[in-house]
Length: 457
Image (cartoon, rainbow, N blue to C red; front, side):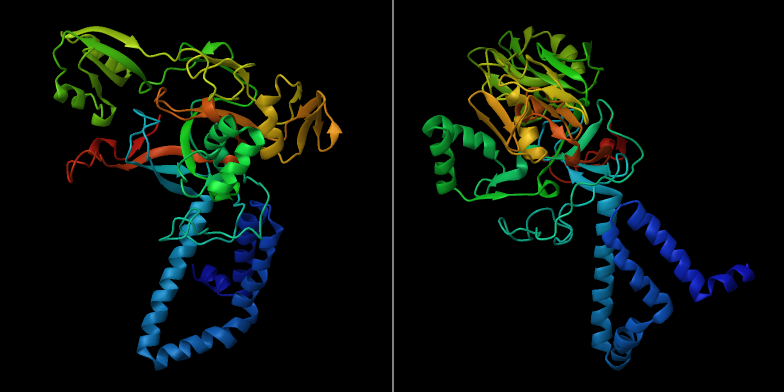
């Protein structure tokens, strides 16, 4: 043991060991040569000690002379260390996320606090490395001020992880259509608003009117809103939704126990016991009752459907199904793709390196990929498709893409409405529910003790 201590006391051994670890973790793993700039600082810390003589020695002297300075600097150093440590953890290891909406019920509930693993699929290096720490895209105490600068921007690069996205994983990702935001209504989808303006005023005038009436901003990939959905189809899969049931490559989707659909529940005129609904975990906000029709409208899981159907005062239960063509469903081309949320596809999910023949008919499916996600110029002239100014009859995809859906199938804005999720938008895998609170109850009854530290399936 003394021999080891003697070896480790050598400054060159310390410098060499720390340098190798730094190179492996921060240069080789990240693939970012800019981080080589850290090596001179490591050398100075262990060998030359210029900063110690000119900066830190003066800092120590001031601490000895002034108790107030010493106390202040101890706080500053502690806060700085905590911020750096938390930032490194959030970028490379894991993040904490809270569920704000019901789109994944009953798998995930509003008020669930999640552990999201970045290393499950490999952490993506930030596109905007210079940003205010511990916030997402907006400065603290502001609704509009950006928390990042874009004059230093890194291209997409994902580090090696433990695996890849698997079918039916619960995945956190950056919202693909969050690249453009209406600042005075940031929770609304810019493209939904744009389509409304264009229907009213026409394609060009509608866009101009929206820009004149609202302040519009753009966000890089890593600063777009975080969403969580289930990866129902992977790159190369073919997906179809038939009567609200999902089929992948012609096979029914694997059973998801807590998936739910909306049902019409007719009774004999007597109300369903509210306590029974609460025991089934059905939120009050989800319960709608039409007294004239003696009918409840509410989302039910498979198990809750069986329980409701057995109630003596329930006379009929019918699953809701969207009818007709929905122009808001991806790819918002109802003339060519007459789909709705419950009858959708078949749709092939693009994969990296795959080539597709381009036609005016299938261009709506892939236009956003070509233009926005993969950064090409695209236009159609006289029936000819031009990519980057050259005629194109086919296109080879540069990234993998995924199709995401919420488990609350009739109350989820997902890929059925805004299309594919590019691989560079993937944040991590939702792994564990760490903590959970029920907004409809008061403390301490609002704490869902049975959900704490449960694995997400």
